[in-house]
Length: 195
Image 1 (cartoon, rainbow, N blue to C red):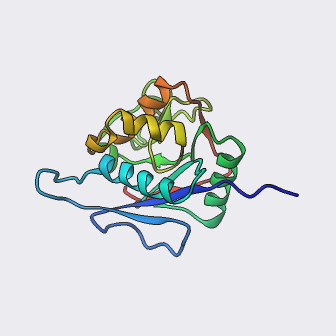
Image 2: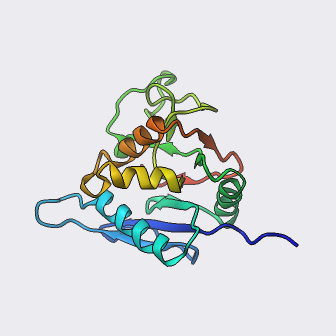
Image 3: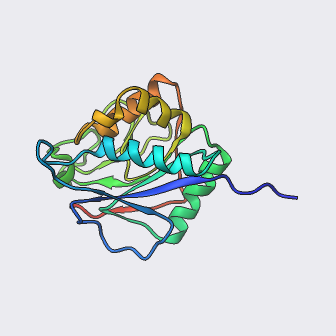
């Protein structure tokens, strides 16, 4: 007899209703809109609320998979992510994705070839880079699985008050504090479309 697949909350961030159309029905849509006092929305507040609601509804939920609305995936990407999370639920799992200068506001990055754009990987060790690291400590939430202990620590650390652009960095900092490893889902190949 095989045990049932672990339960993972899947949320897709839809900033100001600009998420790319997606037929994938695995994800709950998490709408983040501008509001008075928060012109870039309240991403931390929304993620903390989504975790509280979804984890309360499903006892034993092991974590949450986050997909940014400007990232395109296919069914094999999400399957690879969920399989990785199920096999090692206490790690952060992130898919390799290139982040473009229009999003990052960076003009130069480490490892950049002369004449190339200043894109960088959504995972890195010391600073954003065009070097594809196997053991990063920093990550963006483009397509990322966050384990339950990390989410609970983020909530205790005040995630409800975290706002753009610092949410991803603060989550990664909490993972470092808890010594949670960050692993790469090499079988996934999402594409960041904000370029």
